[in-house]
Every structure is written in structure tokens, then in C-alpha cells.
Amino acid sequence: MNSPLYGPAKALRLAAIGAVMLAAGVGFAYAAGWIGAAKLTPQRIIDTFEAQAGHYPGYRKNHAKGLCVSGYFQASGQAASLSTARVFSQARVPVIGRFAIGGANPYAPDTAIPVRSLALQLSSDDGQVWRTGMNNPPVLAVSTPQAFYEQVLASTPDPATGKPDPARQQAFFAAHPESAAFRQWAASYKPSNSFASTQYHSINAFRLIDAAGAAQPVRWQLEPQTAFTALPGQVDDKLFLQHDLQQRLAQGPLRWTLRLVLAEPGDAVDDPASPWPAQRRSVDAGTLVLEQVDAAEQGACRDLNFDPLILPHGIEASADPILAARSAAYSESFNRRSRESLGTGARP
Image 1 (cartoon, rainbow, N blue to C red):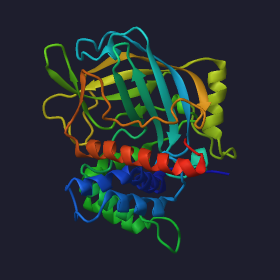
Image 2: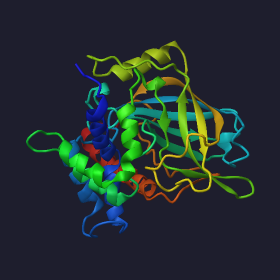
Image 3: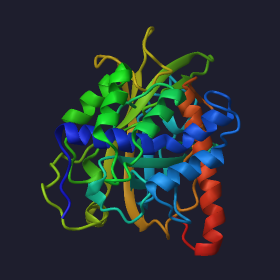
């Protein structure tokens, strides 16, 4: 049976998984000259990451366990004045998506990993494509690739226990006060019993560009229209979240509201560890409607690289250095698993 994590123990576990979420990206931070020695290549970093998290040929190097979904996005029209992106004005935009849990193990029990993700591809009728990868934490624990690398090191499993050393992680947090918002969220987070009732966040900020060329920094979040129910204290089914999603979609579509949170002057638009004030103005951009679920090996999401920098005209990246590292990491993960799949046949 799997027991959900709560309190301080869960905060440490989430921090470790947070390192897993973008650990591969640190390799590209090295390659770009942001941190460390040039001789430490992205390939070596990802090799180290896989040595820590597990090597599963043919699978994604993070969020390895998941399943494909499809549906559409129905724009409200309220964001059309903020961005020329067609997705905000088109009546119905086809969507391919993927729900997943964090980590490199494609066989991990669904409820053993607190991090949940939803990645989407929206394809508008002007030929533009928008890909976004969202997670349930609203912020990261760190602001820079250098700090992220330190977090990865702090989360290295102890050979004696096979788990990260809590004292080492606590020392990391003490040295990184910018992690306070993440730690506060982790300590209070209560997981729901479904992907359908989970809220997902862009974490990084982006820039909406309007018809006059003016930019508005935003973060976005998907707010579930499915009522929250807490995850049971004990779960026997290792595919609990997947089975739940399949059962719900068999009964009808699932919906989320896409909310754009608008930054104001002084907000940290390039720092994914810094939350914005809760009273910031937001815009209901429309409704995500998911209608169908497929196994990862069979669905249309299988061969998609959900690179967060694949953006349509009207949406641009911020200068957040971790966002750039994410993009490069996704590319390396995609290329590596594609090569591996030639020998294994597994391509989720």
C-alpha cells in the first residue's frame, strides 16, 4: 500500500522531486556557460541524473509515467486584447495532452510521487502551435541554474539508505532562503484523489504581446472544475490516478479554466521561486475540455516533446534562465529516448 506524504517529511520529498523535475536542465546550464566548468557536458549531467533516478531506456527522462489525452480549448475572448495568439480568439482549438507523475521511474505507484503534471499542445487554425508543461507546485524552490544544481546534489540518495539525506536537504534550504515560498506550499499541500481535481501551474512567466506590440508578463494556471476530494490515506492500486481518469472520462468530458495572472511593475517575472501577490488581476482566458484518454504508448502525445518554448505568435518567453534550461533539457530527453526506443520499442 502507498501512503501519501504530509508535513515536513513531504516537504523534503517534494524538494527532492523538484530537483528531479528539472535536473536534466542543469546540464544545459553548464553547456551555456552559466555555471561550472565547460568540460562538464549535458550528456554527463544527464548520465548522473539517470544514475540517481534510474535508467529506463525509451522512456522520458522525467515524468516517465503518464498517459495521453485529447480534447479542445474553448477561448472566452477575454485574453484577445492582451495577445495576438489565435488560441485566445478561436472558438475551438484542438488539444493533445499528457498527464504524468514526476520522476524517471515509469513503474512507480501513482500516489507515491507528489508531483503531478499536465502538458498540452494547442494547434490553432493559423498553423501556430503552443506547447506548455505545467506542474502542481506554483513555484520552484530556487531561482537560478546554479542553485538548482546545488539542489540536485543535496538530493543525491545516500548509499546506505537509498534516499536523500534529510540533514543535507535541510542545510540546502537554510542556505537558500528563496525556497521559503516553495517550502510553505509543500508543507500545506494536500493531494486530491484525481488528476481531474488538481490545479496546474506554468511556474515560469511568459510575455503576452498585443496587436500594438505591447508586452504583458503573465503566469498561467489551469483551475479544475472538478470538485476537490482528498486522496485516501492508503491506496493499493499502483495505477490509481490513471484508472480514476479513465473512469471519469468514460462518463463525460473534464474541464479546467485557463487563468492568466497579470504581473505588475516590481513583480519577479524572471524568478520562478518568487510568488506574485494573491491580489494580482487575472483573466479567464477560456476552458480546457478533455474528452478522451489513451495509453501513453498508443496516444498522440507519445512522440511529442512538450518544450515550453514552442510558442505561437503573441506569446514570448521571459528571461527566466531556468525556462531556457527546461527547453534544452526537454530536447535532450526527447533525442535520447528516441535513440533508445530503436532498441527497446518503448516510446511513451
